[in-house]
Length: 341
Image 1 (cartoon, rainbow, N blue to C red):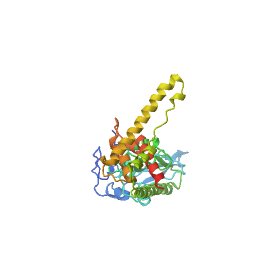
Image 2 (cartoon, helix red, strand yellow):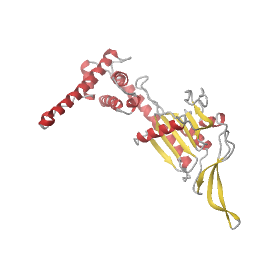
Image 3 (cartoon, one colour):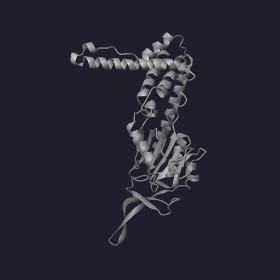
Image 4 (cartoon, helix red, strand yellow):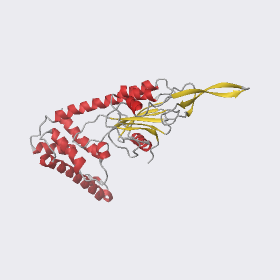
């Protein structure tokens, strides 16, 4: 696995990093504090005019070199690329300061990659546990390039970046899981925009604000479920049948050559639905963890079943958050939401 860290300019809160370049911080820190206290103040980005010799004179071409100034781990300046006068370079300190004021959360990880041309800051997104231990962490990530290629990007991911490979893994996950509703790729800006830093701040604040709003709505919703009792077994099974109903066997309407296969598929599906209902009911009826006789208890039984009881040959964390198990949990939540209106 490639770390590709610039010197020792990598930070992690509490959790050790596989590459052990630096020790994790046990104290939460702002991005600007990390820059000053852990990264030696960082470095600056300069635009220097490009000249060429013409008729024995040095003439400016109108283009510029993007120059990284001296860093704590490399005193020699470096050219990151070339640009026109339209390019507006971001400064690492500006990005860190914008992160602190816009997100208003401490950084989870932060690093400079390569020779410093690539920078990322991550933070833990707000979340809400349905059952203790079932939460899949989600990270907001801002990635900034100080050349003309990478620009600035904002995305969310289940992967916590601590190096070159993990930030790429996080970004690839975001590409595959973008839903247009605050998950995956959120925003991308280019250096030719004079409002790049301003817009980056707006988007970071927007993403964090939406996440907080959703968490508050969830807390209110689940609080309402806890106040709605389930008084009989019949009511419990009515809820379960509504969430996970059997399908009608229509194989008799199929051509005789396809009838048997359709009948088998229908019976197999209904058997699985029955197993779901029975499994959740067993937990609700007493085998679950701290289950209460109300809508909240039914919700917890459902989550416990799909997160801990239903067999799986693969790790279930991502399925619980975004895959088939998440869809099944949401079926129950949808039924409980409709009944509690």
